[in-house]
Length: 283
Image (cartoon, rainbow, N blue to C red; front, side, top):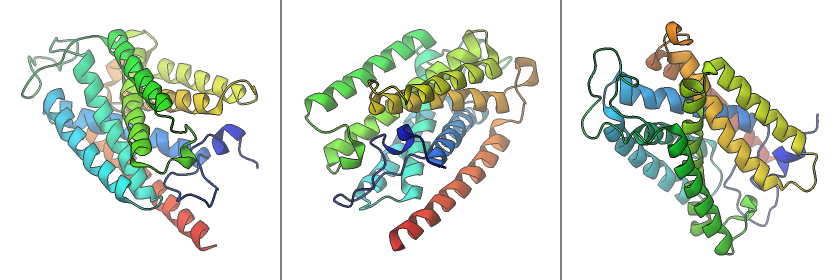
């Protein structure tokens, strides 16, 4: 079955032999792994900040440092390695979860467990609210794309071969995952749709993007980044659905158990992608 154009020509995959491939091909498997990684990012971020009570501030610092380490490994790699690439995606998802929570939440009882007055050491959150936080993050993402445009570097991600190009790409990834977290939490917690309703709304929006693939005037790059942002709230709502109490509409599986299962799934997908990549390079 032929893959949709938006998945193979989205400027992320590369079949060209003139440049060293460092990014995966954007197929259906790519989006499955993206949702798995972002869902794990949601549950793991909540595990550290809430279940282990490290708080949003300390967890954000720790996870951002992990992101930097994983990014350095990815940047130093000479070719695409599924384990390196998806570890960076996972680290941006985890960091994005706590960065969004720190921006949007505060120490009020609305966001804390019953009887708790604080969560970890340090500031308890800026309390900007999901709409304001999403607006700020969207503005930052627009600025990144503007700088990208003004730099003269291509948006054809298959042709990114410079450090600056990769730095812009991963900056956009980090901000888009944080933005997606804010959107997902808003849909789950504040919109009245609940976890299932929020997930259905995002799924519907993604189906609209699939339909727009057939519209020639809509750039594939634009479709990719919208889809990349929207799969993050899909992961966020799915993560909340797995971990939150049944009284709030969740399955109450807990952050630890859900994270362990999702990590096993993601590692399995990464191993499969690694085998496929090795087969492709030796063929």
